[in-house]
Length: 181
Image (cartoon, rainbow, N blue to C red):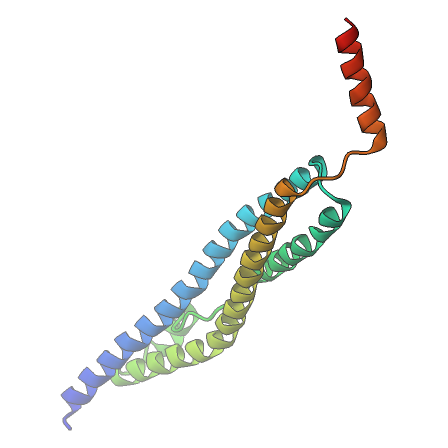
């Protein structure tokens, strides 16, 4: 293999290593953006659920049952907040290396950049993998919680508290008063 072919191969590998590193960084940023949106939506669901259940005429058992999905939602928010916590990622070849590499030949520069990109990718993999696990757990918990909340709210619409004797007496009194008028 000629020296020109070796340089062409190294240039190709530099481009590929840059592309892989950029894809990894985009994946990280995408998960951050999605987590922020999910946190916003989820944090609205909790007070809406509490308001609806506490203000409705539902059984006390159903009101206590809503604690479970709200707890799941809070745990999901914690996982999603972990996704948003800033973690330093390596970006490959950096400005600090310019002065050190200025006197190297072209082949050594290409080899150095391939190595820097490879090491950065390997270092970032742990962080991105942990972030993706937290994101997946958060999504699963959010959807589980939302489904449970939907079921509880739907059930509470069909099951209401039996009227208390005091309420029946008040209603009868009001009806008798209206009839006498």
